[in-house]
Length: 460
Ligand code: SAM
Image (cartoon, rainbow, N blue to C red; front, side, top):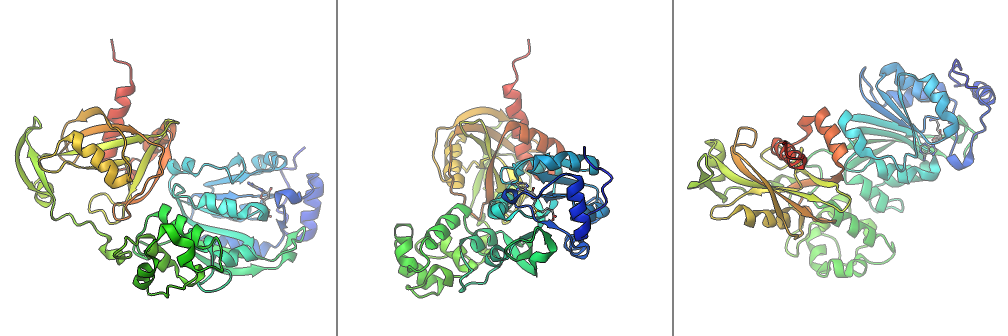
């Protein structure tokens, strides 16, 4: 029997009697250390700056020590709790909230996208804090702020400055997209049972555009993991085959060729990941596309070539021209979408087809589709025409050839063009598009509609 009228157990004695009433013994293997300090709980939630109606998600609510304070500020919340013994209690106590009974390490952050931006927090179970952190810092998570209580050592590691023993893989892998600030440490005595380790609260906010040199996420991760695989070894030896011209790269970064992984700053790691043998990552502001030299065929209403003009004039005068979109599927039937780079002159930071681009003057649609696949995703694969779409306002006066291809990745995404990418199921996309069409490039939405139409059986 669940005690739904249980008062908020925020004194040690209250928490003990609440646990007795619920017949609940804290489980060590679930990292259950319950907070019993009202002022601290209130302070943690105040750091979120929740406004009424703001969407939030709590990981591991337990008996609701933080939940009540969040609920006081906004009712638009989601709880993810793994312990099945607490689910009934949470559902009855918080009927306005969505209670998800799941392991937060396996929670699919793509399902949060239709609901839009949200703030995420939790006093995390320490045995899986890193896994939860990596899951919720995925590119598909629409969090605008995260606030977690972690084991102090982990908090110090992800908030570390270069050069020290704490600075390492986790600092960089999380730090490339999130700015981490350690707000305060907490003594074990505020939890029941008292954990053997101290805790710390970290605030994580997304990095601002242009804060770091642009680089490809996959390449960055690969080099960081390799570089920190043996901390004491010099980077030149560890990076070996990946950066064969390390002495030149080191000189371009301004570090000695004998440098170890921990002596490179986050910005230097980003520049290293974009080292191309001649230059390391440009200043963020110069990541913008050089679009001035492009010439397109101008076409009439029947898609017949009637002239040529520069990209600038074609767009300025709204002249009809040609483009391709490629939908890349994997064997599971998921579609890969790219998030357009912040440097794009049209529709920055919205989700778009796997690859898309203009047909250059003198080229055909069929020639352009594989070229775009190569240029935007760094792969080659057979492409098949799905359908053609007529030029209209929504396509930006483009006739579009929509192609499909099959590929499992991984892809190499040029950072000046593409922010990141991810696979999505058809159901996920349908829900997300219906809820938030503004998250997508208009050209993709037209292609998506056209794609769905091709899947329908022909009407009699
Ligand atoms: N928020 C509560 C508090 O501050 O008193 C509880 C914090 S306790 C440190 C961690 C909570 O996470 C517990 O409720 C535990 O059952 C839950 N938990 C443990 N493993 C989890 C997982 N993999 N996914 C989701 N919740 C988990």
